[in-house]
Image 1: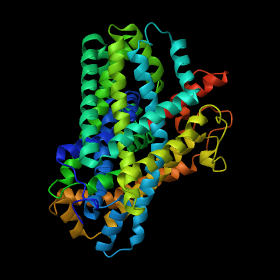
Image 2: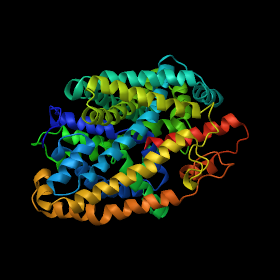
Image 3: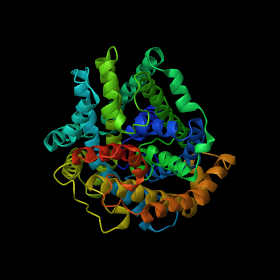
Image 4: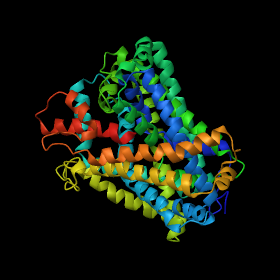
Length: 501
């Protein structure tokens, strides 16, 4: 069954696959979190480390997942089972795919909520709501959105309806058509914002902030942050890339396609920095504002700058494109699994998946207001004090993805015959293959296990803390707050930064 999915779906071209894979990889974290990390963690020194991590860890894992998908030619779990059986191994390895799809579903349930925020702010920007606003007004605007569960559910519904409209039409008529709109919109919006930054922003200060190397800031923690950014940004461990591989024709080069995906994903992140920070420095905003810059600080700039209504709208089109393309990739893997394992056709399956994710998303929405004091896994040390939204994110991003990535590396690196890997990857037994094979066997598993152990052993926040431990350092830099609503507001800022990656 190699070379196509069980349903006969295939990408129409290599470019269509690249757009879909890049769309899935590029998320809100690329637009804000990566440039922020780049500027705060040593500039080009961090960029060098990130690129090394992306190509030494992200690329081998991306090649692995796509290869398993194309060889297996089915859903995430069945593809792994097919490869295992062809390799004379147990079908229990299919757990890797099931785990990835479960993780993707959890992420989908709260990422659609985040995506709804971008739609709301696009409407605000286009309607001129940012004109002449002050900091208090932008803070109130964002806090008001989070405190309004009905409005959040409305936007979450719109996001799910868009997902349904895209995925119900299949790969070529649905996903390809969507990414051929969303990705050019994303690239176009970034280019426009970068050009505006060159003309009207402080590009000189931006260059110093983002690209001046400061190796004194590089610590083991920063290296781990670079590994995490590379791993999560590419979308490893969610099952969707295995499914995308199942749709890939045999004549597509997996190594070349994977390299292009990583290069484009990183390129978008770097360009986003040159789109955002010229405005930050031009208007005297705080470059250390973290994720709150998106929904609080940048609206101040859009309210002051000439043509701010237009450029604010363009910026949130950029965010919408990044968010929706990621949601589509997450949902496609789940729908493909339901189609194959439960025999539910695509058009019904997407309704079930979207409906279930919408219902689960209500818990995250209410966690911002009515259920803000609920900590569902409080009995686990690393989850102590985490609210519903934090719990979902920590479970998926800090635990399940790392487990899935580790198992994928072990399975494909150690349990699949060398000849099968060479055949599916379409490469010779060369230096490149030797590098890939060494990394997938001896480097990636211990690195991911170390990250997993550190994440699990890390204690949760103290009862008085306003934010989860992964972002504790950022919270300590924030002003002290007494008002409960403002405390929640700071917590959500940091949540965006943690989830977006």
